[in-house]
Image 1 (cartoon, helix red, strand yellow):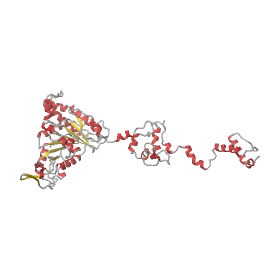
Image 2: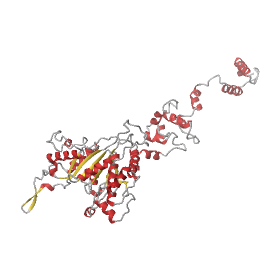
Image 3: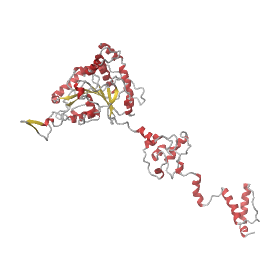
Image 4: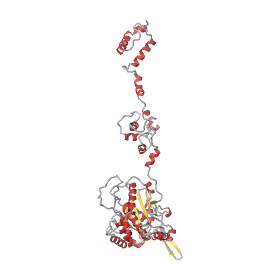
Length: 508
């Protein structure tokens, strides 16, 4: 027997006894010559199959790599992984942990969404912060970029983009008094909005005023206004530019509604000369024109926060009679049953009335005299004394520093009235005629007009309108889209109103 075979008899006996206790087959005998190679073949496999002893040093570090996948591979979804089910819920847990921490359960999914992108990109594996916004990750869902049901990131991003910016007005009600749905694509699901409507007689400047309040300045060309004003050709033949109701919404979420003129002679002339067929419930053209105007005014009194009454001279008694009639025929405020955003606690019997503002457009220099201004306020207050419309307390010319010498208590019966002067070209009042020529007089100083410039007055009026209180239009809080559906219901109710039908019958 070799020297190596006699050197470890005790060790071989221990191995045999251990193998007999496990019931293994005995190989060899103490007297056999177990050379180096055969002994290695006998001992090495036995020690690897025996789990009672841990492998030496290097194998301890390799054990986690053999038993678990690397963190980068664990975050990758498999090709055949289902999109729905428990695996979908585990996706944020895999994404929320760093590489060295693995994917421990119990961490909130919000941390996962903020800590990583929808999939393990190269930047995330290198430890860099993802540049993709969090709202895009939430919109793409929990399936990951590698799953078959994942949403395209561009589609998810487009759903959260703001609506397109309007460049011109569109129709809310056409010339046939039919409702249009084209304005829906410009509205959002948010409640912070202001709705401003306008009514006035033909040629008073309604469209120009609404354009200056919404998106344009007096220095721009009127042909680029969002609400088209009367062209010289239309003025020459005594026509009107706006028909029905035009819609425009600004990026500040202010909705402007421009309307056709009330009691318009050009619309009546168009009905008579073009032999347009009247609806069966109307017998005479002038009755149809008046009822159209009342329907529009009653509609604005129900869906607007503020209604601007534009006049180009002070004052027409027929305008105030028309306002009182429209208020009488205004439909009752219904509850927006389609909106589930919440109730406000208002009484069910409370009626809504908007703020009304009287705009004296194309005012003369004499109208800005404090005495004449006080007389106009007193007259409007007496004419609107029995009205439920909110015609005072929300707009003041004295707060605009237009009359710096007047005290706040000068107008004891101050109503919501504002004066806009005639739009004049710059430098028109700074020329004087001397002899046979015209020379500049006080060229460094503006000419006296009795009021600030037209642009300054428009800016002051715009700031007053945008600061109007945004009262609640119905018994529930309305978003922009819900307001659109609510306005459609009101318009349909106005056209089918029994009170308006009875009033139309009495006019015949």
